[in-house]
Image 1 (cartoon, rainbow, N blue to C red):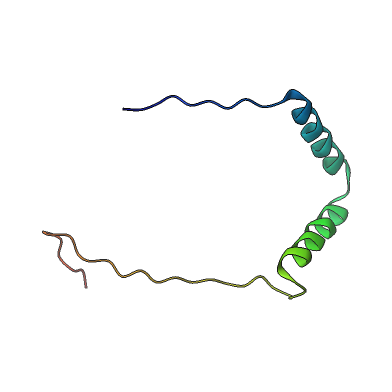
Image 2: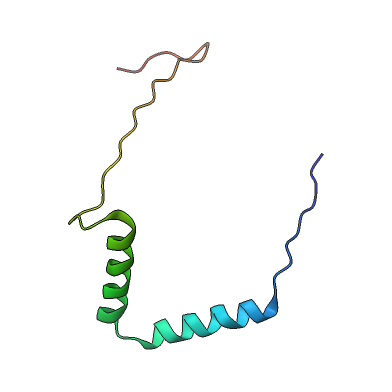
Length: 69
């Protein structure tokens, strides 16, 4: 059975989000990128690049499916 769900949001908080968005959209792209880079360095450390993560998952063939060459 599918249950309907909903969320309530405080409109005062929405106003703050809207003001933040308007502020950052008013800033030049260079300043926005510098802010994102500062947040990245704060969270991930002072590395030049983000760490690349690769995960290999081996799957079993389903019945009736043939391996392709």
